Image (cartoon, rainbow over all chains, first blue to last red; front, side, top):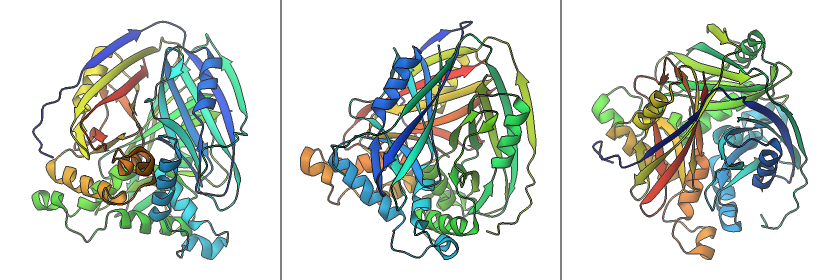
Length: 159
Length: 159
Length: 159
């Protein structure tokens, strides 16, 4: 935690100019169960990238809907259970929420959870694939109190 | 939470290559009250998109300033109150902070809150509009202990 | 927290069309200590931007690896200590985690912490520099229980 430290990283740069940039738009629809429900969407993103024919660039994904979110995890049953518990502790389902006093839909905690996790992630594309760690997957989370078809809007920009 | 599950999503892809990509830069300035203060900036973002003449692409927004953050919520008084409470529980204002021992500006919790929420969101643009859920708005949050003019830098890339 | 409020922000737009967009890819490798370890990578990002020769656009950074994350803070010892404490309270290291029952690698909390903070940030570029607040830096966080070389994939798109 000292302010003085040696930065031992490396930087690599490769650049390309004056080539056509391709813009790809896509949408993923995920049939989610009652929240907290965490779905691995990495395969679907890799499919989109493969179909896009983009070699290098960025994939942007955004969950449209205020009770859904996106992040990355190692998608295995242990982490899924641990993250579910942590998300439910960030905003406990059985507490009082102001949202419910007006709307009575029982999802006050869902809104808070989704806002804290955030709606969007950006993943880099190299050699026609999303660059992720070996044990890293992109996940869509449904925080709502009923099954929802979560819509994930995707844009891929690259060359 | 089982690792085995059927993915029932759909994928749609549309692509365009070899057209000019437009790069738009903009800035929003938000006069925020003492934090936690949550402002809906969706209208301002939609204005920027409309003025940009971009039909399809991505809007990137970043809060410059380490005591501000961006996320999405349903912007109604209940959720605003619930998120305010949750954010203040993530980093309690009336606790001891190391930051304050050196700087004495009373905003140690503001820095922690903003770091946990994150500075940036990416929203997709389709048919000249930001694609959001029906009940979903983009918000800028001032976590600081005094009113601040929060500056949000915007880039729009698309066609 | 009232729903009624005056929005006093300003919007500025500048646009450029029909110029070549440049796509830059880079990678930063950060030798991180045992987590929670927070490294300032702003200098490395500014270096990449300078080398890229891009005047205006967006820099996207993603931490590849499910026990690392990216965010922004004021990089000074007080905030570093405060954020470290807060992150360790979000997912306590000495609690039981389902992940560890199968994998016994002691990093169940690291996975949860990284998922809650998120893998990616987007920073705007203006006048050949990342636009950040005066006291705002981009940081890579290693949450793992051993030193890790964290890899940050970077894409810069702009003109």
